[in-house]
Length: 76
Image (cartoon, rainbow, N blue to C red; front, side, top):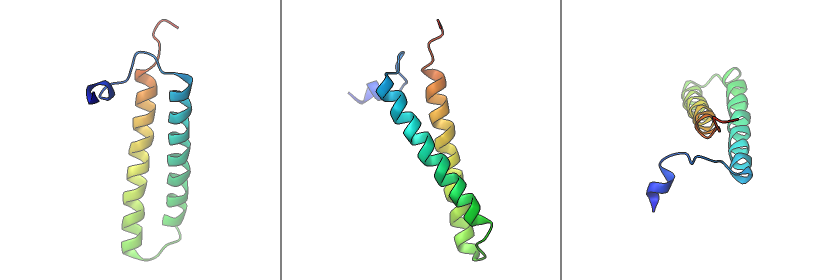
């Protein structure tokens, strides 16, 4: 059953796109906030955690964009 979720389907439904948009927007907002905090925090351990979070959010953004790109209909 899990095999169905290892690759992007040929067609993304409206609900799929809405979910991916929500994921993108949440991660983009979190990335922006973490980046703004990074500029005002002086504690080195907190800065390191913020940098880790920024990296994770950025990876998530790229993943969502790749899913959308893979799900594009080449005939359109």
